[in-house]
Structures are given as structure tokens and as C-alpha cells.
Image (cartoon, rainbow, N blue to C red; front, side, top):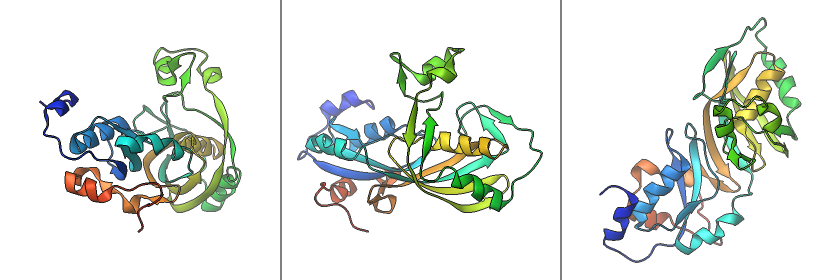
Length: 246
């Protein structure tokens, strides 16, 4: 049996307990990663501290056993990302998984023009949640309302103040713009990219997204999910008072 029900029939070893850093591959939901770790750890008691979109890769912090109770101390930590924006087009999801709509670009912005626009976002701004997101409004996920074709989607999308602590150009070669973003928890990088595209008057969507850090925890210390086995899981477990060191 390959589903989670088969966990009850697996031979039990000593109960695992602790936090683990996982490098999520693209194409999986964060819940998929939890399920994969459940099977290796031989326990259902696994949770994560903050999701990543399916197309994104990078750092997830998971808790196993009693350590799941400490995850709430990690959820609000600042996050750091590398994102490659595709300029000159938009999508309804603000990322590569949506329907691509090319924009009528009459002027390709120079690097100094991009830098000027980024200045307006540094420090923070008021951000709307993407229409295709898991944020709940009136008891429903926004993506459910978006798929229903709600005419008032723009007014339904909640807003919040987000803090952009670092926003710098890593590489720019039209139409690709790669940025490093350090931001407060709850910031939608997809929305940030979309908003930057609007400010540049060319449109943009997130083509590649990788989370490189959560607080002081780095993806460099994470275990690749493809390589995860029971031995690596045991070796990678840590507690809040004894974090991994690069």
C-alpha cells in the first residue's frame, strides 16, 4: 500500500522527534512534502512552518513528533527568496503556472529604470493577495472564488502592509529579471513581481522562485527531498535551541 493508511502497518522504530530542513523540489505542494516525510519518519505527526507554492523550490521547515508544537515560533520569521521575473507578460496566477498574456511593450526599461522602480518597494508597501491564493475570504479560498468568476474579485482580495527589507537586482537581461528579496512573513512574492511589472508598465510574472532562508535557517543546510532516507532524517533533526550550523 502506498497511501498514508499503510503507515499503521509499517514496523515501528524509536519515535522520531525534532525539526528538519527540507529543500523542496518544484512541482510538489508543501503538503506533498509533509506526506513524504511522514513515510520516512513512520509517523503521521509531521507539520510545516509556512508553505511554498508548487512551482517554487527551496527551504521548508518541518516538525516531527512533539516538535510540531514549536512550529508556531517559526511561522512569523522573515523570509529570503531568489525570484526570476518574466517581464513583458502577465498571468492570472502571477506565476508560471497561469495563462500567459503578452503585453504591448513600447519601451524596454533600462537597468537604471528598473532600479528606480525597485526603490519604491524597498521598505515596504501595501500589498494585495493574489486572486489565485489560499487566503480565505467569506469562508472560501480566494482561488475558489476566482475559479467561480466572481465579478468583485478585486474588492475581495485582502490587503496588508508588507515589509521589503532587501530588494536587489541579481541579473537583468530583458525579459528576465532576477531579484533577491528579503521580506516579512506573509509577503506574496508573486504579487511583488506583478506589482513591479505594473510599475514598469511592461507587466511581469514569477517564472522561477526559490526560498533561500527562513530567519537564520538556510537552504544550504537543508536535505534534498529526493535524497531523504531514515538515516539522513535522523542526522538532520534538531531543536530550536540547537540549530544546524553551515
